[in-house]
Length: 356
Image 1: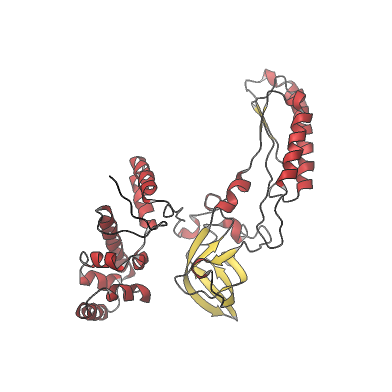
Image 2: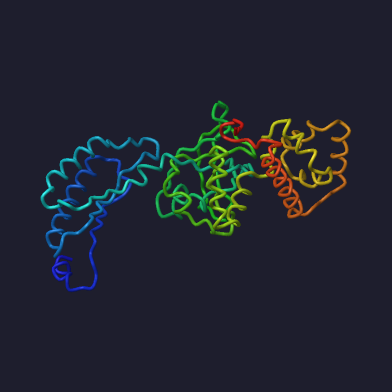
């Protein structure tokens, strides 16, 4: 390396700097301090051997966050004090060079949650399983990186049952046909049912972008805009739509699905009922949750509710693709009514938006 640097000026290439990597996900301050000491010493030697002063030296990262039970937070203050001392110690050797440190995981890992919905619950050979609509293909690191590491459970919760005291031991799996598709293994969690939401914490780093989302052809994860206010959501989608309208349409579809209609208030349900025919409801409600069916029928007259039940019974077996097509039409009607101000889709803040 040093011989190459001595003759580097002869090459038709400009060396902008050095990137020194010494590890990742480190929670021990003493280990990071030792690594930084060696990194600064190496950076000084490389700079001295270079025929001209490099512009930048990337010192790597390595600052970790606690993922698993028993792990303690990194003593950042001690690491910071050591870095300050090292920059002063090597000021002469590295003067005028931009020093970069990578803090990606440390900054964003705890800022993200991964959520997937329970599709099925079953007991097999004494183990209770929750089968979800997401897993390995959305969050590879949580699943154990295709078995390349010894898997441990990330912090996991049943999001809509946080205060529930009744618990059970469960294993949570994704929809893929591989035993590696694990969301949580033998964890004591609140008793969950189909339709509940499983949330994996510490998911802001090495999540969607580090996962094989096309693996086995299941739908990709939706990186949700639902938690933003409506004005921000509209601005983001309108600007994105200028370059990729097809992508915007897919995002809108993922952000509000048919089952989410049960989250609408009664007044909004009644507005929707005026815009959807009974035969459309009969098809769309086939296979939907009891909660949604009850919500719709509760907002109908007794006679209209009886007619809807009769129509659903007359339909018999229907193609899933036909049901999903009608459901999507109704979702589109919801979006249209929202745009015209005739109903309010549930959001994170629950506040109406006004303009003067």
